Structure formats: structure tokens, C-alpha cells
Amino acid sequence: MKTKDFYFDLPEELIAQKPPETRGADRLLCLNRRVFSNWLSERNGMFNPGDFSSSNPPPGIGNFLFSSLPDLIPENTLMVFNDSRVRKARIYGFSEEKGTQAEFLLVSPFFLQGKDSGTVWKVMAKRAKRRKAGQRFVFPGNVIGTVIESPALDGSEFKLLEFDTVVDDSWLDVNGHVPLPPYIRREDSTEDSLRYQTVYARETGSMAAPTAGLHFTDEIISRLDKKGISRAYVTLHVGLGTFLPVRTDNIEEHHMHEECFSIPQNTAELVTEAKRGGRPVLAVGTTSIRTLESAWDETDGRLIPGHSSTSIFIYPGYKFKVVDYVFTNFHTPESTLLMLVSAFAGKGEILSTYKYAVHERYRFFSYGDSMLML
Image 1 (cartoon, helix red, strand yellow):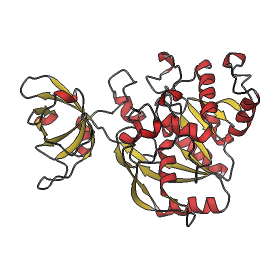
Image 2: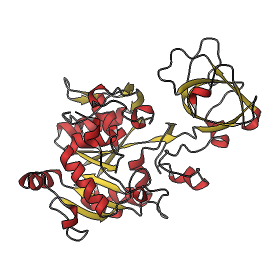
Image 3: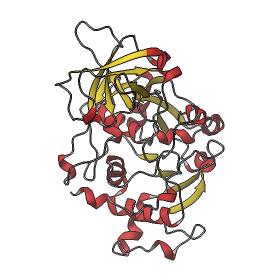
Image 4: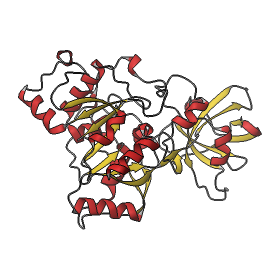
């Protein structure tokens, strides 16, 4: 299967650059997979979004506001959220030698024998080829970071930075920047510190937000509770596996980077009980999907609790074991995320739905609108 098979045209003005003025004030496209797929099949896949409108959508598609979400989800559903918190992982320093600015994205702490914990980090460096071992950079608070030899790292964009003091989340909260994705073409602001974070975020460790959760407000969660819809949480720290582009022509040759996740005992029991009882499981976001599908024990028919990691790559042909419904954002062309939702709803169905979403001027990506697939 070719990477180019997952391309679609997206006008740049539909890439959301800011969150809506009020959290949750987004649009929601609801896709009934079975109805839309059957209708599309009857038409031999031929679909012109210009034949339809917001008030007259194709069969299987509905246009709503996000505030309608609790009304669209069946009462016996178990929703699973990713409660990872975004780390202020982007830092700026100045070359001690030349005085020029340098940008680094902290990926994860890196253990080296004889080095204090929190002083060495694996990083992605902007203009990585220029960052040579021995170069020193001055960061806020006169913290010095030195590029050190890193033969074990995969990919030239990765470097090791050794700091002369511990760089932890308390330091980053003061001196780091919100790691907005590159398609948001502006610097981060104070607003992003709040809005590029879910209201239920708990465990710090993500390099990017689990963006499907950005829509949720305390009021929406309260309405879900009142309807009797169950909730559970997993933690997957969003890393390179989620957002690195596919750089191979054949998607089967793409290798996902590992990401760490954790599943509480209570969540494992709730998901296992739901599956054994025939209740649907709704994953909020692709990271929740990857966590659930990675931790499912097919032999015992249960979700395994505890800490682990995953490099699972889900693309068309994958058979889902846990997830029945999905709530997510609109994803970038040729991305692993688009391939994942195509595996869930069908490649032709997703690309047709995205064409309709473009025609109806839905907002795309991290700060964009949302999609519910039933």
C-alpha cells in the first residue's frame, strides 16, 4: 500500500491556527460507518461533495456542534481518555561561540552511566546537521547545554544534550515553550499553555497534545456522567511515534517509534468487563486507540494493566480487538493517524468524508474541529 494513497487536498486556510475563543465551541462531524459505506458502495465509490450541503449531507454523515456529543453516544458506552499532560518541551538557547539562536525539542531524559538523572536529554535539534559534539548553548537562567556524542541514536535529527544542572518539568514550566506543531505558523502564547492541554491532563510527559481531548470541558464531562456514560483513563505520552511523518513509499516499510503507556488496574477491569458484556468501547483519540489495542490479551480476552510501550502501526487491514467507536480530530495527509482512522472506517470512506469536510469548511488538525465515528 502506497503512502501517496492517503493524500488529500487541503486548503491552507482550513488549518486551524488558534483554538476557538471558548473551549468546546467546535463543530462535530458524525460518521455512521455502516450507513455511509453501504451508500458509497452502491455508487461504486463515486462521490461529489458539491452535491450536498451542511443541511443536506450524504447518508451516514451528520453535522453537529461538539456540544451535541453526549446526545450522540449510546448510554452503555465506555469512553477511554488519554490523560497525558503536555511538557513544555521546546527550548531556545544561544550558541556560546557565535551567539546565534538554536532550537531544541526535548524528547525524553536519557540515562548515561555516571551522569545525574535529568541532566542528559535526547532532543530533536533544528538544523541538526550543524549541531556538533562539543558545541555549548546558553539557556535561560544561564543553564549550559553541551552537545555530546550519541552514536546509538537513530536518525540525524536526534542529538544528546547534557546540561550543567537538572532540567526537569519544574524548570521547563518556567523556561520552556509549548511544543506547537509546525503547521501552526506562530510562536506559542500564554493562551496555549492552557488550551494546548486537556482539562483532565494529569501525567506530564507528552511532546504534543492528545488533541482529540482538547474539545472536552468540565460541563461536557458532567453531561456524559449524567447520561450514565462510563469513563476510564489511560496514559500514553505522545512522542515521535505519533507525529513523525511516513518517509517510505510503501507504508508497510514504515517503522513507528516506541511510546510509553500506562493502564491503571481500574481501567483494565472496566474495559475487560465492557468487552465481555458486549458494551461498546469508545476511544477518545488515536493515542487511546493504540494503547488499548496494544495491551489487549487475545488469549484471555482482557486488557492488561501496568506500564509498557508500543510501536504498533495501525493501517488498513488491521482488525480491531477493543475499540468500537472513535472520537478524533481531522488528520494530516499521508500521516500514520490518517492511516489509522482509515483502518477503522475504510480508506475510501475516510477520504470521501474528508473531501466533504473540506467542502463544508471544517477546521483541521490540532486546534480544529472533531469527528465521531460510530
